[in-house]
Image 1 (cartoon, helix red, strand yellow):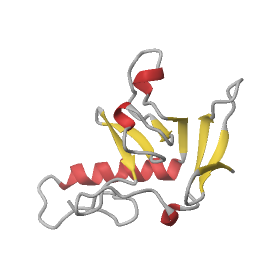
Image 2 (tube, helix red, strand yellow):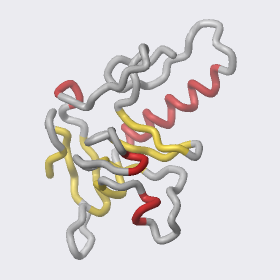
Image 3 (cartoon, one colour):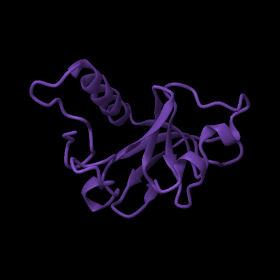
Length: 135
C-alpha cells in the first residue's frame, strides 16, 4: 500500500477496490494529528490502566520510551484506537517498513490531558526530534 513518506498515512492507489476504506483510515490519522490531544503518555495501552479494562474507539495516547503489550516496539509514537485495533503515527512506509519517529517530526505538539502529575494536570508536549518534552 502506498503511504506518505513522513507519517505513513495511507494513500489511494489508482484503480483501487474500495478506496473509501483507505480514505477513511487517512482521515482518522490526519484528525489525530490535527486535533493534537492525547489522554496519557504511557508505556502500557489503556487495557492495562482503564477501569473498564478496554480501549475505547477514539483513544489517543503518546507511547512512552519503554512500551509493553500492544504498544511494544512503538516507543514515542502517537497511538490511536480505531476499528478495534491500535494504530501508530508514524506508521509504515510504502515498503511496509516501520517509520521511526525522529528529527523530521520535530515540532509536533500535543496537549496531554493527564501527564501523570498528582492531582491530574494537563500540559502541552512537543516532539523535539528525540523526545517528548514539556512545552
